[in-house]
Length: 116
Length: 110
Image 1 (cartoon, rainbow over the protein chains, first blue to last red):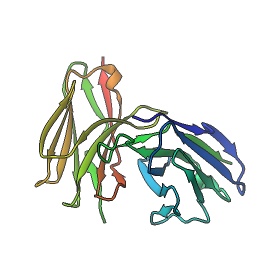
Image 2: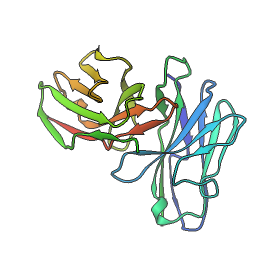
Image 3: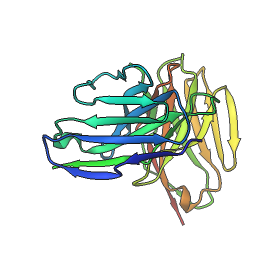
């Protein structure tokens, strides 16, 4: 499986500000995904990021709030814009299995965001 | 609305016993099924994937899939305290995206 890193691992931010989360993979992957895990909840997909095309957002998530970049096959960023306390969550990136064995996804360590 | 349902927890089992986790899903077109383990404060870790009907065994873990009943389960044999975690069922609907159940928290009593 791929080795995935995220920066920052955690942050405390003031409402109204923005935070950009980075996701780096040690191998080239076509598809990268961004999830949110609110306290005590399961994972919700925010968007799918493919290199060379705009991200595809799930219902309830919009580009103005969560802009995503995917400049190459090993890197992606998610920005949480104009933050409010409701954005306090763990944000996780995942990648499809680079070995192409199926639709398995592997997760990065996550970014724990607290908005005050 | 495509949904993934897991049996409500928490599930408490004595050390050495079998922990049984269940998951049902709403759409028959589902192709791929996964079990993730998530320790507190950590990210989900893939422990099992299953694609066809029947059983798949990996060490102390057995996944069972019944597509006709839209049901997938995970058995943990000889449960150890290190198995204490939240187990997430995930379903792929055929479009590379995963939908997750709410998770079942397992506690193994020493």
